[in-house]
Amino acid sequence: MNAARAAVAFGLAAVVAIAVRLHNASAYPADWGFDAASNWQYIHALTNSWRLPPVDAAWSTGDPPLYFYLCAALLRVAGPKPALLPLLNALLGLGVVVAGMALVRRAAPADRSRTLLAGGLLLFLPAHIHMSAMVNEELLAALCTSLVLLAVARPGLAAEPAPADLRRALWAGLAGGLAMLAKPSGALAVAAAAGAYAWSGWRQRAPRRAALQLAALLGAALLVGGWFYARNQITRGAPLPFGLPAHALMFSMPPGERAWLDYVRIPLATFGDPQLLNPDLLRSVWGSTYAAVWFDAHRYFLPSDSEAVRHLGTLTLLLALLPTCAFVSGMAHGARRCLRGAGGADLPLLLLVLFTASAYALYTWRNPWFAVLKGTALLGLSLPYAYYASERLLAWARRGRLAALGVATCLAALALCAVLSCTFNGVFERRQVPGLQWAASESE
Image (cartoon, rainbow, N blue to C red):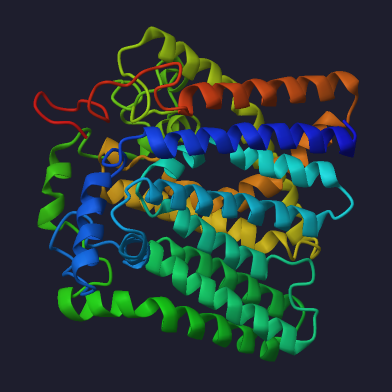
C-alpha cells in the first residue's frame, strides 16, 4: 500500500475509532468500569474539599491523586456533568496515540505508512478503548509514561550537546513525576529512563554527562511525584500500603493463591472461552492477561452468557496473535540493535517492557485474585507495542503481494472485531451489573 492509500485508510479508521469512543462516553454508565464507583466517591469528595484524604479512607483513596484532582477540577469548572470524564479519558487516550505516532515518525521519518500503522494499532487496541469509557486513571498514567519515552527514546541518546540532553532529562523527570502521581507504575518509566541514561553513559564513556542526566531526571521526578509516597511512608510506614481494610472484599476472590506454573501455563480456554472465571483460565496469569488486553475478559462491556460473544472472543484472540507476535519479534530485533550499540531509541523501550512485566508478575503474585489480571494495567507499554509491532508488521507485509494482503486482511478483521466488542450496547447488549459473578451474592 502506498503512502496516499495508507493515509486514506488511516483517516477512515480513525473516524470509526473516535466515533466508538464518543459513543461510549455518552452510552457507558458513569459508575461502571474498574473501581469506577469508588473513583467517583473520591472525585466527589475532592469537589467539596481539596484536602487529600487518608489512604485508608475508602477503596480508591490509596491511589495517587493526580487523576482524581484533575477530574474534580474539571467538574468544579464545568459543573456536575458525568459524561465529561469519559471524554477526558478519550482525549488522554488519543494523546497516547499521537505520542506513539510521533515516536515512530522520529525513528523512521521516511516511512509514513509505519507511522500511520502505529496509530491504527493503538486506536483499535481493545484495552485502550475500554479505558476511554471508564472513570479510571490508567490512560493518564499511560500518557505521562509515553511522554517520558518521547523525551528519552532517541537515536542519539547521549550524543547531543549537553544542554539539550539536560533539558530532555528534566522534561522526562517532570513527566515521570506526573506518571508517579497518576499511578505507582509511573515509577517504572522513571527507572527505564534512568537505566537508559546510565547504560548510554557507560557505553559512550561519558560518566559525567550520564550523572547530570540522572540528577535532572530523578530530581525532577522525585520533586513532582515523590511527595505522595513520602507522605505514605510517614503516615502509614510504607510508600505503598498493602492489605488496606477497604480492600478486604478482594481477599475472598478466587483463586486466592499463586504457583509458578500459573506464569507458564496458557490453556486453550484463553481462546476458547475468554472470560476470567473459566476454571482452566482462572490460574493462568499470562493467558488471562492476553485475553483481557484483546477482549472484554472481565465482561464490563459484553454479556456473560452469550455464545456469540464467546465466538467473537475466540476469533479476536486468534487474530490478535499476529500483532502480538510482531511485538515480540520487534523487541527481539530491538534487543539485537542494543547489543550492537546501535539501539539508543530501543533501550528505554525495552527496559520499560522488562520492568513492567516483572512488576506485573510480582503484583499478581502478591495479589492472587482474578480481578487484578487486567490488560489495562499494561497500557503503559502502548508506545513499545506501537513501535515494535508496526516495524515487524510492515517488514512482513513487504515480502510480497500475498503477504501484504494477508497482513492487511488480518488487521482489518481484528479492527472490526474490536469495534463489535468494544461498542457498548451496539451489537451486544449488556443488561446485567458489570463484571463477572464470582460469588453467589457479589460481583467483582
